[in-house]
Image (cartoon, rainbow, N blue to C red; front, side):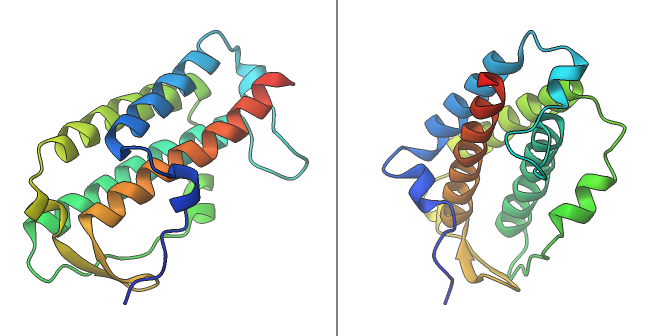
Length: 160
């Protein structure tokens, strides 16, 4: 049995694909005119910078989009967990503007995939070592809620 989606409250009753588009559009708008120093601001001491949040979002789109594709194409797919803190240090050379561009591009690709899926495709099951039995729909909702969760942090940074 899977655990509750950790970003269900962030998504609420929103349609997930539309929420993904709206979140990425909001992010791109927020940071459109930022200089490199502005990407290095944070919303609270000891928390990731805007650049790191944007990099994390791009990484998550890559990882979870791949997870969905693997589930759809691989019978009895068992996904692998990843350590977001270990991933983020590997991308320290990526600038904020580049992270936004990667996020926008991979998110568009993921939205196109999810938008093309039938109800049966969305019900495709796979497993995760921490979350248990999941479906592509669960993953889609997680991705949308995750984006919305981080939009709030980026809005806090923009307001500083």
